[in-house]
Image (tube, rainbow, N blue to C red; front, top):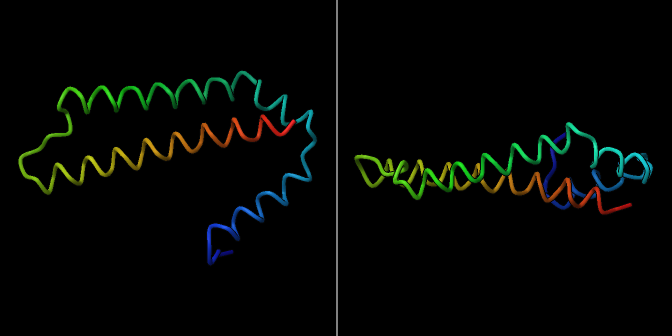
Length: 93
């Protein structure tokens, strides 16, 4: 199914949360694999920030530099959003 807006997507996701008990959310957030996922994402974010600070995203041309930086920003934002979603779901209990 395609969504016309992000709001439509989130409304459907929120509606699906009714099928998950508070206890299941708590157990999922504190599950070792969920904790490992969050730790891994945090490490990936830190790695990219340090790589950026070390100049790893500087390329031969302005265009290449802009593209690789935009990609890194998108990746970091995606990882942060995932961590925030896990925290949000875990806080619904």
